[in-house]
Image (cartoon, rainbow, N blue to C red):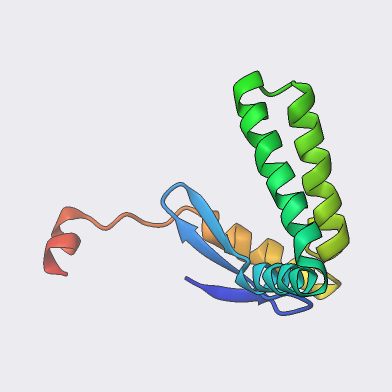
Length: 123
């Protein structure tokens, strides 16, 4: 049941899965990758330093645990990069698109009839 209930500013589609839904955020993620590529073109060494620092903090955070200093530093560094590149990582949904997204989510998780064994065998 893939559909695009949200068409702007970023396309979002909703697909039903056996345990819930999958949101296709490819359009937004493409925007992020393009912003990352632009940042690399402008100052690659600085961006690489930031990414290596985040990777180091992540390794330390996994070793030290969820409430460690490294975890908080990593989260702040990631948020800072998201703030710089893509307005903090939030995906805006405006006006009527909010209702379209809500309806698509509701339809995706609505109970679906299970075919009987006779119907399943006929298919």
